[in-house]
Image 1 (cartoon, rainbow, N blue to C red):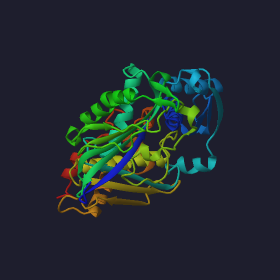
Image 2 (image 1 turned 60 degrees about the vertical axis):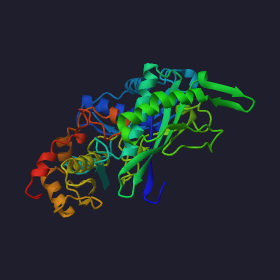
Image 3 (image 1 turned 120 degrees about the horizontal axis):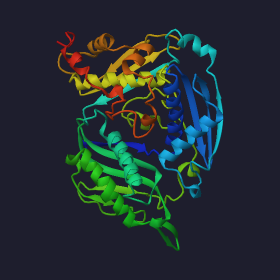
Image 4 (image 1 turned 135 degrees about the vertical axis):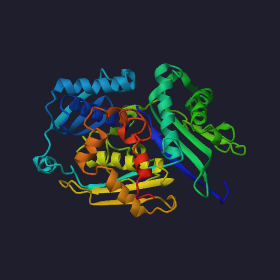
Length: 418
């Protein structure tokens, strides 16, 4: 790496990662409540560990949240993720499910009932022109790796994979912030015993299995996303050969670098809702206000205002008003209007514009109150479980209204811009 370049890294985790299992269960409960009662107030937290799921929180809803219903929601979510084998310490049909849910505090309801924010805090949104999805490249590719990992596992193309996995992508950038090549990929995946080599030193994941992951997962993903940045061969780095020679522009691939990942999932590591907030957003590229998303209904601005901030930033970039954009919104509990709006484009503004003008555009074209956010983004629908895996941002799915970019034309043609 020369002095004219720098490296940036982001990670993602699979749908079977313990924290993501917890997120998906919390959002499965939320979706169920919204499907029955769109006005539901939900703050649902989940803990998963060896053969145990604990669901707790404050929920006010007309939906039936009896013990048997919550039990079914939890087991259906776990089964869909892929934990069905009791021998690995966590499975849909055999885990214990404990439920501790009560109604939302009336002190919070006072402010929310009149259209105020469900909590105080600051929320950030980010967009840049590095990818067609207007997401930073490292987190975008990290998400696609674990998404494709899940597809290969579920279709049986790599039958030794188990649900728990993590990816990490390092991209080399030129001094002016333009991606120049992929530098390093890390992929750790839980696996079964069929790809274990036993020696007198212990059990090890085989290099043949590593080669399959490179050929069927890593290489196709990189080529599908940015083939122009694959400027050299993908080089496996076995755990016993950390100093292997790398060709010029070679992409280092660390696959199960500890040597073995047989024990994983909630049995290997306790999972909690809301513990992967950087994975859920921009991989460290943009700031984060600190509030988690999953298990929260849209009156909680931790979630809804973060979605709006992404919507704003994405449309400003899609309109060509900046090459990258970060937006901060802040709220006070019980108060409807944002206390502040801040925009940073990192000196990538279109000529003739200022960030003050962008703030004027934001106030003019976007509904910024909690109720306005809910209405404009249609957030009272049961759409959230899908957000809890493979990224809340960067996937232009029909239900992900905050990823829509049609308002960009209005922004581009507004007299404020001219």
